[in-house]
Image (cartoon, rainbow, N blue to C red; front, top):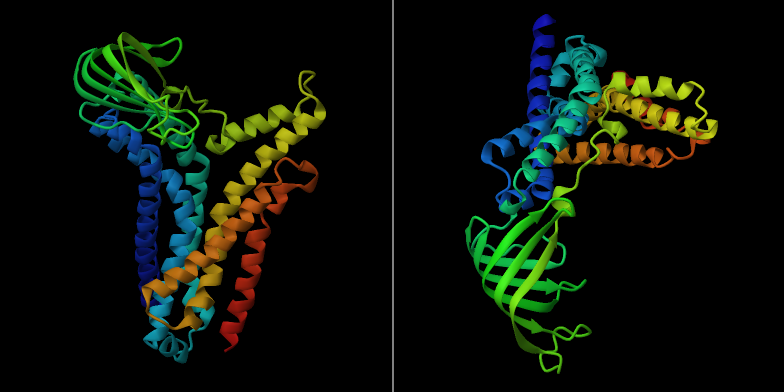
Length: 380
């Protein structure tokens, strides 16, 4: 029996960890493309800083990948064993479904403990460090945004091209002003320019020399025959480039999800005490928000157990080896779970409905379904 337990435990553990790794990588890739690609293309992130930021995103992604990865591992292993008639042979030897699933539930308990540690400690620390380090790297030299021989479309209403950059001196400068539909309203061309960073206003100031300006009709920029079209020349043309998107100072401590368990409990205790500066109703509202975050983190970690309880009978009954099919089942179940969680979290501004307690409804529903399927599988 111990040999069988070790075999099932090792199979589920290795498969689940591999699934968690793949899911974490996929989510990290999407997140990095969305959040860091602009900075990388602008030359603002050195390679070692980029790698450091990538590592810091891992705990956040693991929070969501862990339940789905373990469910995928259980479905893959038991689906393969069922398809190969191993489950039938084991049960013919007198081992019940509960005996088969014991090592799986033990691994799920370890996964729950890991989820609690990640949700309440490692993820908050990593997220705060991520935002702080990214902000420091980006703000170290704002002028690095201007990369030579590159069309820079990272700004809200401008596209910029610069031939060469020598310190604060630029040559062969092209600036396209865009409207809300991303159509060109005005084009500036200049032989050379100087560039400065205005820290108080958080803008880049570009002073173009010997510039040519081509204006378009603001109502119809694509109408080249308009009388408003034409070219003008100017000795000096100042340009300002707002940098709020890239150089905003983030309030890294404002998000409740980025606080550790100790920080959340400290804040909750503070809100329980009378405070003349904050009305009692507002304190209750803030306290419920904190309790909702705490319960969400706990529920997400214990979702590993709920998915394991559901995955055991489902994996035995499905009886197929196909990785894609089992993975699809796992994605569908987890999607339903997180949609329910999001729906409950949307009630956080309505403390009378107790969204902190409602956060456990998806877990209870999945566990109840799992218990019913488990008992049914054990009797068959």
